Length: 487
Ligand SMILES: *[C@@H]1O[C@H](CO)[C@@H](O)[C@H](O)[C@H]1NC(C)=O
Image 1: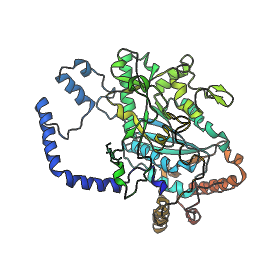
Image 2: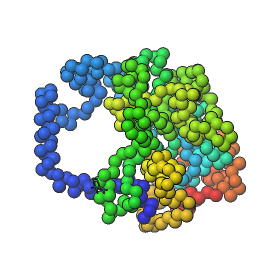
Image 3: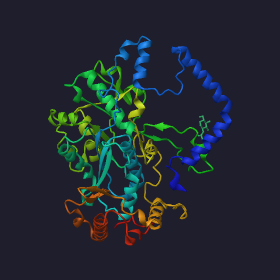
Image 4: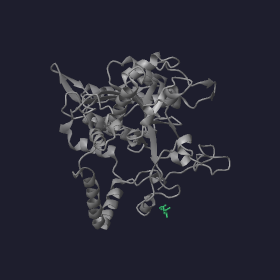
């Protein structure tokens, strides 16, 4: 099954491995636990096993061990409150069509987790395809944030753009950020295949506070805490199946975009600022595919000489010969970090490095490394497999229960649970599910075949909202195999 190639091991595989490992290592585990207990015991005479390690603990520990400089590290401005509680976050995602829906679903789950961590999250997805009601209904159930906190919440809005915008789909978020700059504490721009979790946002805030205390408020906007994307380096030639599970024994996270040895010269740079240089590094190649920012930083970058971060514009270069990568790279990274543009310095914390790394869900780009015409490759390198488009995919077994299939069947079986996407306000009920907006009547500019499907879906969506967000038979009669093909 070639489609399994790039997949991470399933939960079942992981659990099986754990069971084997547990029985195999039972005796060893006790021995190492004792060893660990002794090791910790000998440091401060208090067994810390199972006690969560927090920044405050680490600082206190440094104080005990006489490392005054580290103990004096600035703590979060929020004191004892959770960094995420009551935080207002605007997330924008460029998601062209349904090609990466599998990844987008994971991305949305990450932001759903942020709501349950106490934040208010508004997610805006820019797309060129109209979502069918059945998919929206399934996502409504999945994305509903039932957290009781008055400050947490989640909204999802799909903004339709004509397919002709192509790579410029990545541009629209910027204007939205500046239009709504007073309404949020954190802004996130990302593509639809990068998994961001509450941890990512919290770590970003924690480090941003630290940077600001280290350089002072006037210079804080010379820097932005960055992100490094990783993948897992599954073997190049083996499909991971039940029979080849052992092929994952050496698999590890790889920062596939950051090549070159010695590492501190070719892949990672030291930073110049004296205080920052003690805690932070920059990646030599600063492409991130996403970025985060606070309103203060966005405001400062607007006025920063040579930056104009609020101004959407084309990547540098003439005609079809861009000199600095694609529009995606430009909007997500190069405009901000490029020396000839905003010239903001990307910072990654040495001591919390892994917290600012995110999974690139397709888990495929590491395979490019060293291939013909790709990063680290030469003319004599092997070609990337399937590079000529002649591939034939073998579908997975039709008996596999698909999420959308089960969703529709449950709704058929439980018709009394139908009006769950409404909320009361002044005695009036209001639809509160995923919004799909076609503000510029973009659907009118779709190609003819596509347009008919799109208009029909928009009409069904409006009816769904009008009745309070539950499906009727015509919404459930969806071709489970072919609904993504829209043209
Ligand atoms: C894992 O690495 C070891 C050491 O290089 C090697 O002997 C082994 O064959 C590797 N396993 C797989 C599945 O690649």
